[in-house]
Length: 293
Image (tube, rainbow, N blue to C red; front, side, top):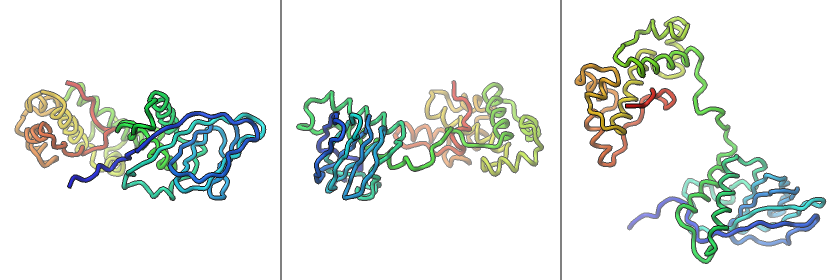
């Protein structure tokens, strides 16, 4: 028996945009499906099962099936909000149960707002909804929106690049440049330390804490990281890849590659062609040398 794919499966999806005059309110109701509301203007209050949640402009509200709810709209200004309802026959298994979902996000991530607007655009473009169920791509849009809200409480990265000590940054930049411009030139610990403007001993301590490997071996792993990408993304021969990565002897290159990845270069290439994923990178992605051929 074929198992059901573990993604959000929508039965229907529809929505719109509404204006409320100052002081109006929505009568009590029991929600029978899921609703996502985005407050565009006006100060609103969302009351769910007797608990009031202030909802200023920019708030994203999740209404859940079985919730007794009402809205109180701004007493002074017009309140404008967009919304969509959906029914789901399957929720991803890694989601918390709906009763544990956050009711409201006062400052949702920009990505959440962008996804919401994109979903609304699709709703306006599909006049056959909700009579016909949305397709897989639209299910994925709604799933992505909800995922971003689940993760919104986590600290956001200011940069995709980890915060490494400055000597490590300088050393990595220098090694990346050497591998790119003169790959056959082998560099020593003393040369790497000189590029980082610190002692070899201090640099080794910093690399151990920040990267997990000594500087010289990190340089070797950077070459192998580049080799792995070239094997899977280019038509270069193993010999050409060895030279591009700084190994004049292709047999020695193959031995080092096999020791690090557990599979020979030719085996990795063949496996990828047959749909098997390549082995994981030995280093974080921000350390990868420039990829070109």
